Amino acid sequence: MRIINPATEEMIEDVAEDNRLTLSNKFQLLKQAQHSWQHTALTDRIKTIQGFSALLETNLETLAGILTSEVGKPLQQSRNELKGAITRIQWLTQNAEQYLAGEWMKAETNPEEKFVYEPLGVVCNISAWNYPYLVGVNVFVPALIAGNAVMYKPSEYATLTGLEINKLLKKAGVPDAVFQLAIGAGAVGDALLHLPFDGYFFTGSYKTGKLVYEKAALKMVPCQCELGGKDPLYVAEDVRDIKDTAISAAEGAFYNSGQSCCSVERIYVHEKVYDRFVHEFVQEVKSWKIGLPTGEGVFIGPLTRKEQLAVLDQQVREAVRRGAFVLTGGKRPTHKGYYFEPTVLVNVTNDMSLMQDESFGPMIGIMKVADDEEAVKWMQDTEYGLTASVYSSNKQRAEGILEQLNVGTGYWNCCDRVSAALPWSGRNHSGIGATLSYIGLRAFTKTKAYHLKNPG
Ligand code: NDP
Image (tube, rainbow, N blue to C red):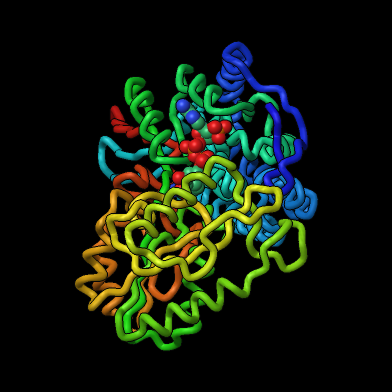
């Protein structure tokens, strides 16, 4: 499998892919090793993962460079991702003991009643490329802490990062057979669905997630899917500072070239502040440096996947054909690399592909609305349900709007952020289940209840 640098289109490395036989052998290794890992003290498993986190920190510059070379995100954003992963691991390791401890429900009665959390067993983690450290850590860290053995399939676009993760986990002391890599593209992911894992944890698109969920259903094992989004942001007329709001919204839409599951993908603005907001927003977008992701001060790098360029192109064409205006961007630059100019469209309607289908690129449609009621109507006109944001100086008003939306996360005066202490979950086509928080720590366990009757 050829690993391509999306900024230069040059090959970085040729990596050998797994096949059904190697995957099956790795699965057997995991199966044999899981029991002893489960019976390693929880405190020791936590210490091992803390060691992994320390190694991420020590090797941050090298790892950031590798990540940037294969996914194309600006180097500073790769560093940010690693720092974010370290913070997440800190929360997960500091809280694991508390939330994985069993509970006595009736300690004084006969029978006594208690329950404990046991690991699922051998779990499969099929992961995405856009934040391989963050979305990986959401799954394999709590899974390992809980005593599971893990088969980790990095996306083919984040293979080198997957190899580094494997190396550092082993260096930190995770037994070789407890964590195994599945290297390859979609066919390798599919092959994993034919092995008898005790749980599947998938991060990726709705299209693939649905396939994974259907196949896992036949096995009667837990399956969680963290999928895409078409996340809306509403700017009310009472925002305190239009410029700050525009800058925050623009960053939420374009960070990592818009390739975040919780990127802002649609913006609705109250008509009273619409013109000023659009002006500030476009000014901000035009101020960014676009170029090689290793360049100083670059904010917009190439897309990771070449195929997405055609999706963006098609969304712009359709929108323009139906009356939208391009205020900036709208096309690919002529130089090498999978670049697309940061693009802002107005005069859009909610039935355009740009406002319905995940763009997953540096592109946004902005629409004028008359009031909160109209904003809510358009915000909930979607098949997705990951996040939604409301910018307003009135908390009650914002919460009132967010309550009406079928999303896993609501933001007031912020967007595109994740906290390790809060459950990360999507609804409808954005997925099923949750990672992070105490819910995400327990997601990799099954409960066992005990009724203990003293014969005396
Ligand atoms: P994909 O669905 O294309 O791929 C996800 C993973 O599934 C990859 O490892 C992929 O392998 C693998 N895969 C592909 N085909 C199959 C198959 N038939 N059976 C099993 N596995 C398969 O998603 P992307 O990697 O492109 O990620 C982008 C998507 O992920 C976006 O929709 C984004 O919103 C979403 N996402 C959601 C997050 C959340 O927390 N809700 C977080 C991050 C991303 P390969 O890549 O090698 O083909």
